[in-house]
Length: 258
Image 1 (cartoon, helix red, strand yellow):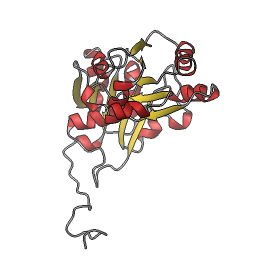
Image 2 (cartoon, one colour):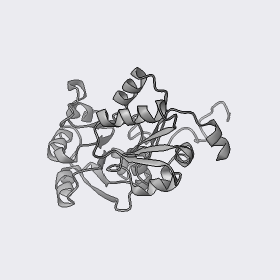
Image 3 (cartoon, helix red, strand yellow):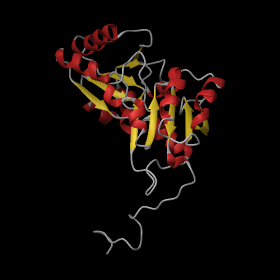
Image 4 (cartoon, one colour):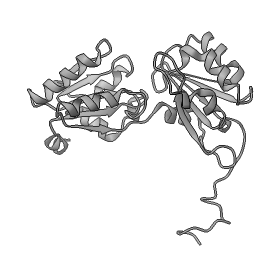
């Protein structure tokens, strides 16, 4: 760890914290948390347990009650004026629904160096908990990650019903508050008995997973009082349908096995 500390640069590290389980942090994320001077912690979206990896003397800044206009100056000041290493700890993977785009733009405009560290997303953790592969040969070969329009509009070309037409493994983020609308749009193309995994706070101590037919998706969500941090996985892969990849099929030759 000391060797890692010696090479740690004075910049902002945008780090994916994974879905919540501390054991699902990447090794690089753990190393950065262990040596960084400052941690900006999205405390409404990340469990407190992840702070166990931080230095005892690290400055912890909670950001749930802050706007981007308040967060950015903190990062810039710590790097530029105080010459400190800063970790911006984000839930899941920074490439998905993380507001990373505007952070990177503003950091670049301020000439503040930054690096992005990927993390495990909730859809990956959910598939692992469900013991499923979301791309089963002969059943489904596409995964769609999306959300329904709410306060953040979805482009018309990505409207949920049009994506549902593919009947792929569809992972629906940030949509629990609009679950009735989402269910109606999904039912335009998926059969009513298509399995849906409703995954609440995957990786947290109080996680819940319910698997129901699509026609019961809204009722189950409302009965369980799930309004935040809920992921829906709608997929033919959740059925008993069987398929086999050619990768390990004895009848299939490839470069390493004739």
